Length: 447
Image (cartoon, rainbow, N blue to C red; front, side, top):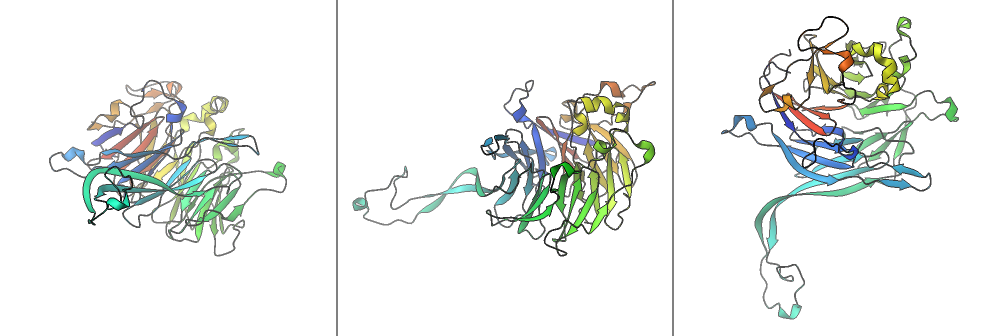
């Protein structure tokens, strides 16, 4: 971001005790809508909180960019699968906004099994002067109605109504890890560990299975699907990533079942780096098409990579996120951190990429200048008009004043979920139960 990065924090855990974080309060997904005016977060308690950006005020120039709570609703409840004796968590795995077609907004939210389509509408007027009802809404005795009146709309306090429009259930045997809305605005796909389904937004009782990697014998299983996304412009193309570190680009025009990919993007492993952890850390946890549609961004445990759709043999750019953790993989395996699934994001012009790390750090890489920066989401950095100071992690001996030792990193504080405003330098960072929003006031180059 910039030298004078104005920062703002919006606390997702409003009206909750800050020192005591329940599992339900932990944010599990963050997503801007297509204009960036709305921002949705989902948490492990099945709630969705929508923030709305305040309009710019001439009297208060710093008020622009403030996101305030717009609506909160319970999206998913805990369920129990009696056939399999399995508890289904209410945790929101992903939220995707649909392009706005009218005054209402729509979004998809999913837990491990069930996808729901929600409609968000505003009401600021109410009808008064019913002919057949009294002021309290009860039906009048028809014999007392002697004249007709024209009902009128009277202003009222703004009410945001959230209503469930569709429930897409029974489509997945395994846990849903991603959903993606197609550029045709009519279909979307949902992916679990072994299958990807294509749904029509208007039809809830059937979906088409477009990828199935489940082997006849589950003992032959060598990889699982970790993430998937539709191409931003071509409605026939989509990509999915695997736990083996490969990306498969599929074309739905080629066949109805896309088990045979059109392109396979895979980087050959360097034999000198081979270790017990190689396969685990090469698993791709997130894949995102660039806004232009020319590139793909992937995140594995230690790196983010940029792939060109026209070059399958290797990524065109590789950025080290926290290379200092290579020597710590054994302890990260023991405390299960090595299985953390970090997300990645592009800025609006595809020139800067962002991803999270430990100790509430997040990383940014400028593709043009090749500069990178480590920033921290913290209470100190969240005061209005505070400036984000770059952080450095040092390994071993000499240490500068503000450096932090790799041995003192807090692995319980991790930035897994981030989102970038589609057109502006505004980012949303989920840190446990807090949502931080940082804004670059002057579009200066990164430091």
